[in-house]
Image (cartoon, rainbow, N blue to C red; front, side, top):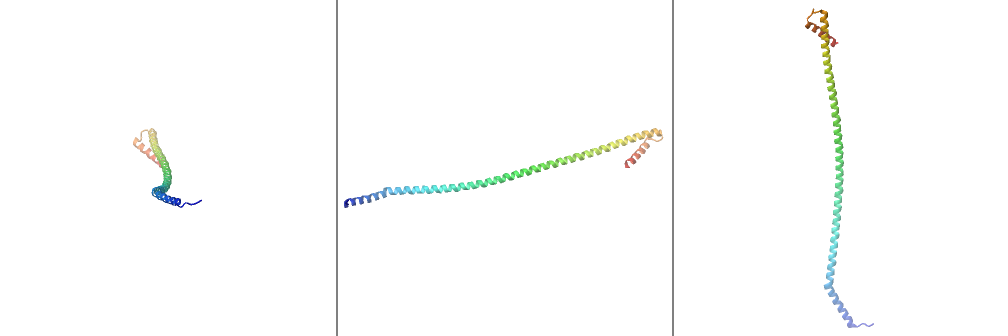
Length: 160
């Protein structure tokens, strides 16, 4: 194998021209395309990282909102139970008051009817006593005196 110096020079010159042309026409666009791709990849990674951060933030906000909603639901449930208990107690108390009022009204009614019956009985007894006395005395005393005597007698009986 022998080396031909003319061919060697032509190969070197051709190679240098090829490198210069390659650098001018191909190397720049290739580097530019690589830089553009690198920039796009960086931007995509940054966007993905930003989206991940936003997703984590939204997830935390949702968890916080869920905890608040659960706490609010617990509070509302507790308040509803308390309100129902208050209403039940109020109804029980109202029913007791109404029952007490009815008992008191019944007692008053019974007492009034008792007094009325005693008064009627007294008047009837007085009337019967007067009639009996009138028959016994055979008109010796007048009716006003007889009624007064009987009323006084009944008053004495009631007091004792």
